[in-house]
Image 1 (tube, rainbow, N blue to C red):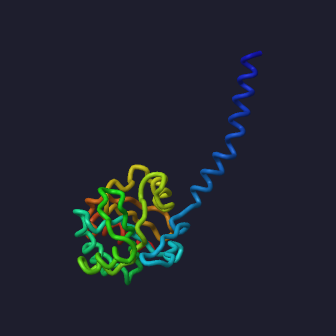
Image 2: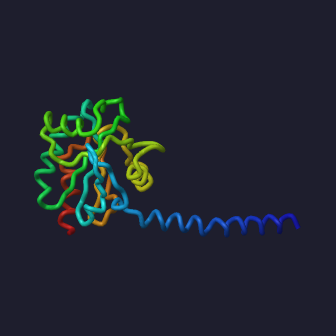
Length: 189
C-alpha cells in the first residue's frame, strides 16, 4: 500500500508541475529582444521594438577599459552598415573592474570626443547577475555560455528579435567573424 501511495503522490506532483513548466517554456520562447527597452544616455526611452526588422548589435562598454579602442572600431562598423539597416547600441557598464566612472550623457560624450563614436548610447546598466538589465538576463538565459565576461562583449540580435550570438570582448568589431554574421543577417532581409 505504501508503494501505491508513493506512485500516486509522484504522479500528482508531476501532473501539477507540467502546466507551469510548459507555460514557462512557451513564455520564454515567445520573448524576443524586441520586448526590452533601454534608457537613452541623458534620458528618454530606447525600445528595441523600434528596431524590429533590423539587426541590432548591443555592446557593453566602459570608457576606461583596455578595450576602449573598440569604440572606434564600432564606429567603423556603424558607418559601414547603418545605411543597410544595422542598429548599434552601446550599453555602458561598471560591472567589470569599475572601469566606467562617468554617468549619463557624459559617457557618450567622452566616447565621441576620444573615439569618434556617433552610434546610440544607453544609460549605464548592470549587465550580469541578478540585478542585470532585463535584456541581459534574457540573453543570459538564451545563451548561458555566451554571457559578458568583460567590457565590450557583443550580442547580435536578428531581424525578428532572436539572439543570434554572443561575441567576447576580444572579438574585433570589424573582424571577419562579426562582419560575416552581420552581413548574413542584412542579406536575409
